[in-house]
Length: 141
Image (cartoon, rainbow, N blue to C red; front, side, top):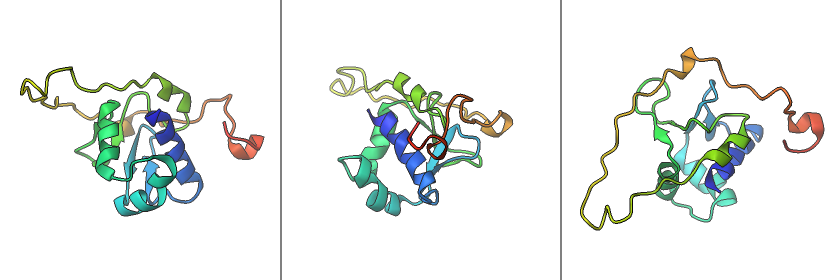
């Protein structure tokens, strides 16, 4: 599913020196695409069938990611179950979609106003104690 692929994509990009293209923020609770063109051309084709950035953004919305519109993480995305070093949490992310018939009836879904948490006031996300990195085990975790 999309959230697990996205987690793998970001982890791989950071491990492969492409954190100038996409990366988690230092606190580990949100991520950002720094360079959309390079992301579309160099990274997306390796993980997703679709190659349009708008399709990628739509998947983010369908899985409940919130876009950060203010503060130093502006332009990034976060979800309570999408944390750096915790890929197993992504299995709890469900596709939310739209209520059936809402578009056919002409109802417009208005985005809710969400106040972005101040992630920098929280403890940063670290790997779980029982997790090891690829270098330590010789395989992925």
